[in-house]
Image (cartoon, rainbow, N blue to C red; front, side, top):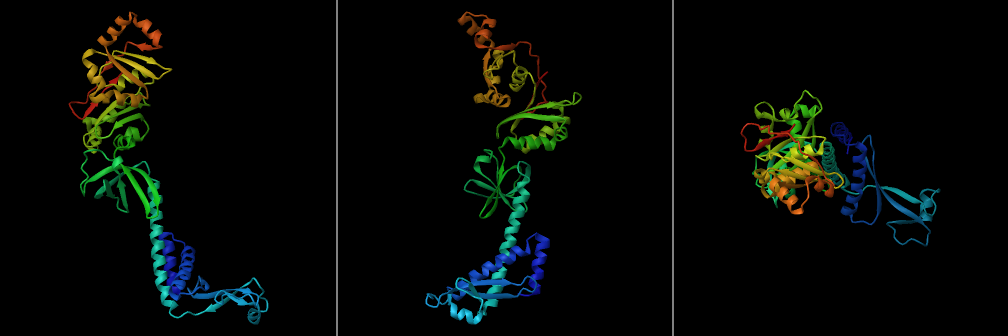
Length: 390
């Protein structure tokens, strides 16, 4: 080793932030292991590298023991012999003797190269870990690199990331070279370096896409209240405006549907319902069930449950295919929702021989019968239904 090597370490410290002292410590430890491996000795050795010149010194370490207690001459030295070398040495001390093993310079050079390469790799992994950890829960663009055992691996430029099966959208085309916007879900530190986990199915992907496409959301003028998602099929997102002059629905849809179209296109035709959030839970529930019309909402605040009455011809629409519309509305509002048609509700009252008021008293319901439901459709788009209750 020489001053040129020291200069190279200083350059590494400046460019990659790898401490020179860390490399020296790692190198000294690695050289001890290399010495034992190459010289096959049971000697205790210590390696010292001069931080200014790069000079490497090897020392054999021996414990000072009584003259009649020597069991291993490689590890121990009788006190009488130690006194000849240094009168101050006593039993229990360690004698350090400089040695010059043959060909150790070549071994040191090889070891130094391996240590530096490993430290550079470790430092780069640390940089990647810190960089991507700071970006957790943000959108990232990646290109499909390969697939293996159900996992999809994306090239992120600096590193590779994985989209596990649980975070994929059923039916999406993950062919090599395809580009996607993904949610950076988690960064894990492993023995092989950082593992970056992505998601296409997480509800926060919807949130981040709206923040990207709708400036009013990014600026905090329009806020997202809640999101209910069944990835690849349908999403409901509730929003409200903090500025009376800004229409939350219009802001999200955009001129000629440009904003919502960009979001839907990125989701590969997943349907998106934009719902106006209302503080009054009955109105919010009615909104959440769009595109169905709602006539009455009975709410039980204690049980956070609601009974919703819809026109007979709207019942299947309110419930949705396989119950999806009702299920998403319940997730969006965080209320239990039971849906009945007008005729079903009237039949129940008749069979029980009670009035509507008696029904409300019996089950602890409050109701709002004057819900003014106005559909606000965004032209004709099979992949987008936007409705609000005003």
